[in-house]
Image (cartoon, rainbow, N blue to C red; front, side, top):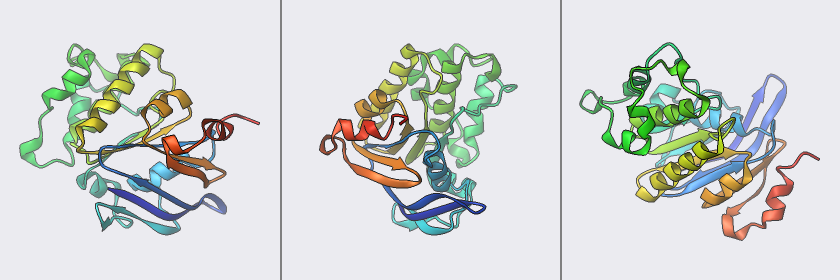
Amino acid sequence: MLKAENIDLFYGASQALKNVNVTAEIGQVTCVLGRNGVGKTSLMRAIVGQQPIKSGHVTLEGQNITALAPYDRARRGIAFVPQGREIFPLLTVQENLMTGFAPLARALRHIPDEIFDLFPVIKDMLSRRGGDLSGGQQQQLAIARALVTRPRLLVLDEPTEGIQPSIIKDIERVIRHLADRGDMAILLVEQYFDFAHALADHIFVLDRGEVVLHGPKNALEEDAVRRHLTVS
């Protein structure tokens, strides 16, 4: 589904990513793990087109999308749930969901019933403003908004950040359901090891802008992965 190959990314003279390779497969959850500041969000921004790369390329279903703008990547089936959620606080929940219509053909511009099956709380809050929701509810709304676009690749950047444990379990259940459905690839950035490890099929560990460990979850030693997540 997704291949990001030999990615070099700079902010001015500072190199954030060094020859990074990441793949994600349909029906699987691929987790990118690492401490703060190691380049995880930069990698996600490179994949969705929000940050230009110096070298390397990104392919989606065999098509090179490296030169495409973020909105064109969205039309190709990439949906992004950014760190911090970035919902529109003055729009209602329903209006926030409707912003997901933008990359869709007119015939698909409706909110699938499955959204409300996955996130029942959203159905009860359609007329409330996004900014009036709790952090956990906003995170659920951000994921639901991404799903409205009918993605082939769902990219989630630290969806557990600042979220209460009960909603973390709900988000874990939704991600597992989406992977088991078998029609999308899921790329998940996390620092919360237990959450990521429970969901992951494949793990990539970043440190100082480079992939230092990768492989199927069961092929990696848990202690080796955890060492790259703790602050030394």
